[in-house]
Length: 365
Image (tube, rainbow, N blue to C red):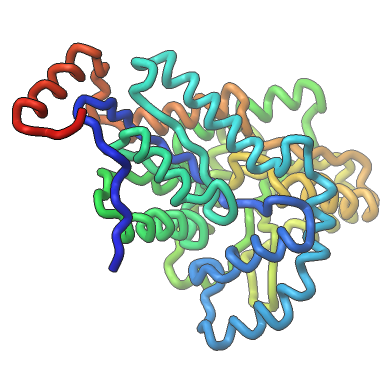
């Protein structure tokens, strides 16, 4: 086994605490080739598709990766921005805003935030290597998934662990598992929705749409379904919103297995047919807007509702880099850093460290 050596070490160098802000991932470009590479990595993860490899590999490489990339590339192209993928752009902005807030509240340089994607770039190993090269010996892993699922948060842990298994000097690690019921997160969602209601008005029905998962994961012990339900309930209570005017649905179904229900698209169609004229959809399972929110909900969901007879449809954006969203990330970060020293690293202390090392025979810095 070959272990990657640590970056060059200098006595007295700064040792900032690292924060790895980790989201799901995105292709590098809205092209079939780039989408094929992304889907190959994503759908090869055993956390994402829990089928025997001998059964799944022929389906993935013989059918899905031949058919789906072109269709998905067209969808990505419909939401692509001058900054590239919306998910990557928002995650970078979140990392920058979180870094700025941390520098305001703590000694600048004591904490370093790096964005990463579980699939695609910047990859988890790339971001962790940058943190380690900056001198980080303690790293907080902050997956941007409010609700825990083995296919998302669990897979993020796998990626960090895989990097650690190949690293000679493994840093001290902490891991944020979920924040689906965190008061700061619920308050941020409620504040964001209220501010949008001032412009849009309140809807007949507020739909909370979460990413779908196969139903079997619920029976196998994954807490995702229950955490989604709790998020929606707490959000409704924070908004003082009538329970009969709140729906919890699940989107992004894939394959023939039975998925968590009710599904978002059929629900939107039924709401229009029942005579609900104004529907709004919020996606509390996503911290940043992406293909699943901007194309699947804001485009396809809108078309489904309006074509079925609805009159007003609004998609309410994710927290993204809003002040409420960054406040939530800041609250989570500082809470989970509790006990780790954030003392300033002075030039005098660094010089004293180098002198002690040299007195003991160190050949460099």
